[in-house]
Amino acid sequence: MNSSPLDGLLEQKTQSGSGRRIGCGDRHDPGRMAGGFEEFQQILASDRRGHGVDQRVRVDDGMFHQRGVQHEADAFGVACPRCRGTQAVHDVVVAYNAAQRMGTACTKTAGEVAGTNKKPWRQKGTGRARAGSFQSPLWRGGGVVFGPKPRDYAKKVNSSTKQLALRKALTERIKAGEVMVVDDLKLASAKTKDFVGALSALKVTGTALVVVQAHDKNLELASRNMADVEVTTGDALNTYQLLRSSKVVFTRGGYEAVEKRLAK
Image (cartoon, rainbow, N blue to C red; front, side, top):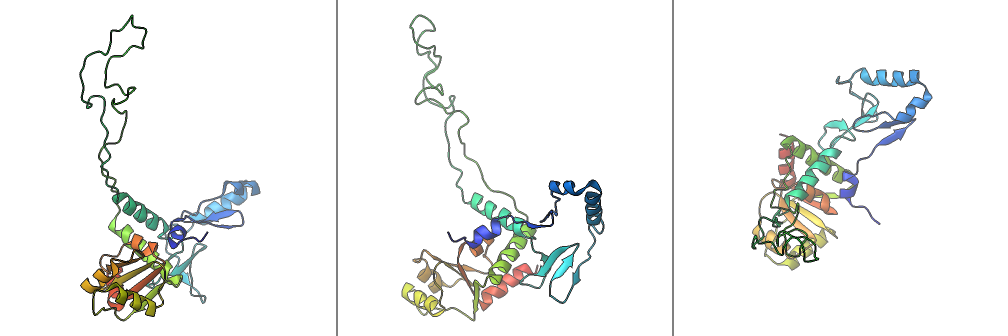
């Protein structure tokens, strides 16, 4: 089964090598203790040296290296570890999906169910199980125990985390060769046929995201009848939109708007 770009970015990955796991936290593998306590202490001491100190060096291969972890420049020329931003993408996408939930599910407790407070039957002598309320959760039509109530599923995400996630997502899409930039995309009329022809001329197939500089009425009306295509502006682009489509088409103005956002 083909994996989507969203699955590749949300999956937390670690690099294995010589008994150690190197990831975002640079954690040690407990199995390393098998090599001897002294060897483990040496590894621990080497990681402590230079902690929090920028020892970044650029070498001839164009990569940035710091404390044994490979760094590389993103699509905007900023050097960062390969794993940086992966968790931010995960957090932003989870928060986006959570915010789409209505949160209107509601059930009634025994105290909220309409009905009399009369005891159904006397306590003893009937041969039936004792009962004290028609609204009992054990009865059909009674209250619900610990049922859902209206709530807000929104999650707080810092603006810096959102910016990092957008930068990481766009960088990965560009590296994968799934981003296209055109000078402009204008339609003479609001016909879906014209929009389909424009995408065909760009050889765009499957799901696509079109990012323009400003709202275009003809473009929005022509694209709303296409379930696999979404049109947005550079100012409104979010990480989830950037990841869900197989192809991303930017106009020059739309891409410059995103660059301006990420430069802050």
